[in-house]
Structures are given as structure tokens and as C-alpha cells.
Length: 269
Image (tube, rainbow, N blue to C red; front, side):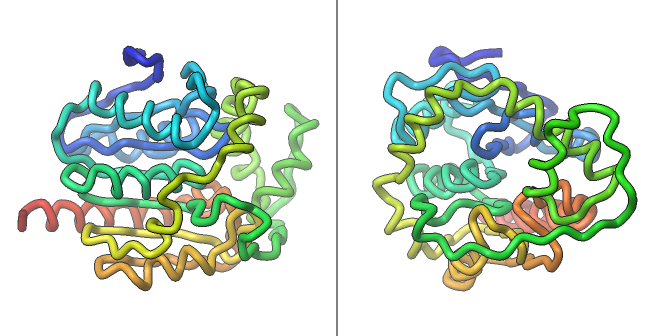
């Protein structure tokens, strides 16, 4: 389905909505393929979106994070109206998730972030050192040209992790609007970034970051959690930017805990 501003989305289930925001150059399959198998029997409504210029969503007229955020807010209002919702965000999606909580404080009731962008300017980020941990031998029968990229992004290397990378990551990479993303990177920084970096979120905030994340790092993310009254942090060894693939079982446990925390928060409202 598409919103009036051509954001492609899928809604599954009923209950309090959770909006899922994928990372840069990916699409909603990178979230739905992970979360749906264990969320099918839940009492939460899942809203999976393709960000503008990615997946099946049209690019915004102006290629900037400000334009993406405005389009996202319009789409969310069209899909779920003014009811409360939680947000999952990964990487660039985590950057946008923080901004959503800032701009829609009456609606956003929880944030679950994996490897989120905190500093848009990559040159100013405190990056971590990547490594590979070879769990077992990998048979590369398909997508051989993408295997090096897998090794550069994932820490945990196994047949299962390679197969998940092919399912969750490669389809989105194949569907991006390259020229749009080049321009988007030129206007990546949100106006409220300095505000977001100092926010004390008064809602459940769960952060999962890897100690080997060479894309966004982990130190600035830890600081964000420390200054938030309801912040919780999972700092994982031998884990990189593709956290859902490197540590799927831990991510599931953390997400279930997050949902319980949001439920308790809503019951007190």
C-alpha cells in the first residue's frame, strides 16, 4: 500500500502500533523479515515503511533529511492518525526515530534503536574498529560479489549469518534510487541534531549497539542512554552495525523486554 505522498508501507496485526524504520539504502524487508516471525501472535500492530527513495517509496522532491522526516510524519498521520505509537529505528532510521520522538512528543511512547546515527557528519563520529569472528565455514553459492561487503559489515561470520544478510540486506540495496541517496547524503544533518544529542527521553528508550560498529560507533549512543531517565543499554561485544544479523537472539530478548516496558508505561498514563 502507498500513502498519498507515495510512501510504501505494510500494516500487520492489531493493537498499539509500532513503526519500523530501516537503515540507509535498505528497505522494509530488512525489518519485517526479522520481526514478523516472532511478532505474529503479539497484540501489537506492526507498520513497516520504506523510507523515501528506498524500496518502493518515491523520493522526496528535495533530497534532505528534513524532507524525509516531514514525509515520514505525513505518512504516519495518514496510516495511524493521532494514536500513540512506538518506534523501532536502525542506523539512519534510528536517527529519524529520535526526531519523531522530538517532534511528536504526545504520540511517541517508546524508542527501540539499533546502531542509530547520533552524529550525521561521519567525519565527526567516534567509530569503532571492525573485526570478523568466523563461527563456521561459509559456502558462497550465490551473490558471490556481495560476500566481501558482508565481511566488511558483519562481525559474526557463519552460513546462517550470510544467508540472513542475503535475505535482509541485498534486496534493499538493489532497489535504491542511487542519485537521490547521493543528494540526500549532502543534506543529511537534521536541524535539531544538537537538541537530540542532549535529550532526556521521558519514555522507554532501549538502545542496542555493537562494540565493533565502524559505521556509527557506540560511545555517543551510550551517552544518549545515560542522560535519559528511562534509557536502557545493551552494549554487545563481537557485534557490528548489522546487529540484528550478528546477534538475533539477544535482539529478540531485548525487544520483548522493551515491549513489556512500553506496556507498563502506557498502563500508567
